[in-house]
Image (cartoon, rainbow over all chains, first blue to last red; front, side, top):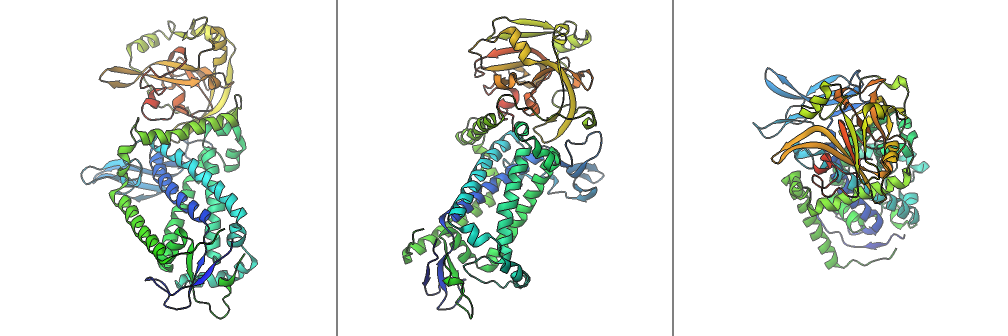
Length: 293
Length: 269
């Protein structure tokens, strides 16, 4: 793919007020298409997943759930107290009162015992069967899209050019962290080190791990890939990892949105919708806008 | 990749699109996720479309797992607790209570439907057939798992004895426990599996649990084990096996009690 640089006068509220900033073609149609399919799929997978979790709002370590012994590491529940029912969340034996959100929630006067609250689940009412239908539908979409992205990005050079870490990235890392902390952003053709780590981490670690731990929970797939559960530490550990990866993906999403807002939402959104991205005006040794691969 | 020129008009339309898209997205967020609720009931078009994915999963997993790939088996050391019971644990049906009072001496397993030789087997006859013992993990659809040792008669032996007719496609299990009460009467638990799972080496009619007779709470006198599927595919309190070519006319027509309530027929995931 070639990066097409063309001069254009700066417009828009977030464009740097400079006459020599340039619009470059930064995101291929494959990157843009798969990005939005993932956004939709992950939205439905998260909310239907929280509904599925509500059927058994506990996480365990090992091959099975402890009923005659204790291997529970996370639990959302409700208890009756002198002050009425309270919701709680317990992590590694530490209990927190989460009334109103986790464990006990709902419209005032109409609260019920629920793991995750109604507004955070699809369907909003308790329905494990329907949540599973939605979850598995989007699991196919998400996985297929990841494979399509992988092939397209190997072919068009996206992975090699934009995501593969280089020695330079390591050198730039401390500077990058300082810049991010100061909310100082450089708009260039290339991803910075933290971006490479975040995107690479999601695409090559978190999403594959999500798929693998999902497969490890299928009793039918256990007959095909029995080593998967052994590798992951048992079916219940796989379920716990599946949940933990969800938390990491939610964390990525929050940072992703904050970074877009901080770096100029119109410019960032334009690049992931149309492909065109406004770079900083060429500085002293900024060679990025001339890059072509 | 082709270059494309962006005209001023084009750019404005993109921006308009962007604005509209973000308004739409925030609308969904604000109205809450109950926006989807009405589209998801059983029989609705959207739900039917989403359920196609389950057929895809069924075909993909059948292709990968074949007929005989075995579910993992465990060791005695992995049996760390009693098998957790679920669903009905103490049937209060008169027929069942009568059979239980007599320690199931009068209980029979009927095998009927699309078979050449309908059977009526006593508990003793069933237990005198070759048996299989396996330590397996029970995975509940809710998310929990429990490892236990199951002993029973391979279902394939019973099917062979009854001689299944070629047009039969599913094995239907009829149970003695009332799982639900509706206006039109009691609903007894029932479920179906296909002949591939029915003839799987680990699919047994279990009468023993952890070296003892199967307890009432776990489905005495007989329950099904289908180790490559989830717990709701393994009916308890079994009294009749029926070979059918379709389950369209039984219950809600989706192949089982839980299926009629929205669960997927294929419980391999």
